[in-house]
Length: 80
Image 1: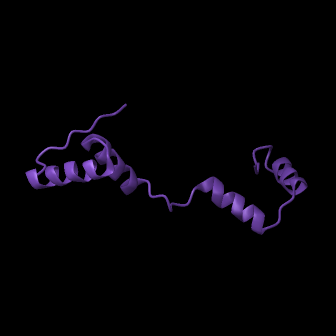
Image 2 (image 1 turned 45 degrees about the horizontal axis):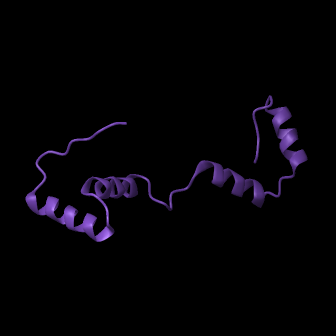
Image 3 (image 1 turned 90 degrees about the horizontal axis):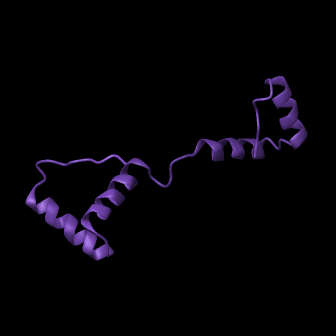
């Protein structure tokens, strides 16, 4: 698993991270991982598969519609 080193972190920031981690009942390292994860992978992000399924639902595609698209597309189209 990749590792990251953060240099020149102020004492105040490090102390705040330790306090925040203690408040959440986890290690400082686990707290930093959680903060980074939330920053780069927000929960409200749109996931491609969910978006495509939603579009298919709104278009009221049936299984036979999907099969027709798959045949036209050389067998690559699918909806789950």
